[in-house]
Image: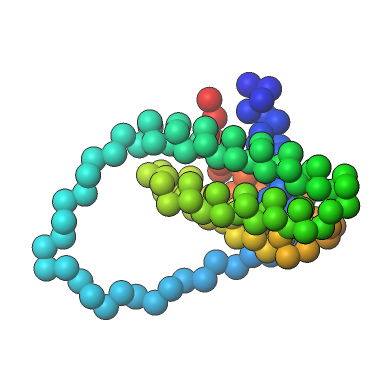
Length: 141
């Protein structure tokens, strides 16, 4: 439980590095299928557990890399750590069957990608708070 709390805290801190992210909406897809293909059945609970496990490992490793880079004042390494976390979260969002988890991971990834452009900037703790809370709620052990 302690590790879970530390991972959530690390995630919130890392995700809070960004200033306002806006989620754009793509255009409507004009193509429709005459007969939709059957969707494979997914065990949402098992999928969510696996994605959460992978996310907390990714965020723990990434936060450690980011903190080490900050301690050394290595801006390029800090930026790379944040960008790597963002990419990993986007990949996990693509795997997530739980819609709330998918949305939270996508939002946090966008924030980390933005933060990677200025990894030493002062962060606002309130940014991505809702996404972090959703992640904590969905991934609660």
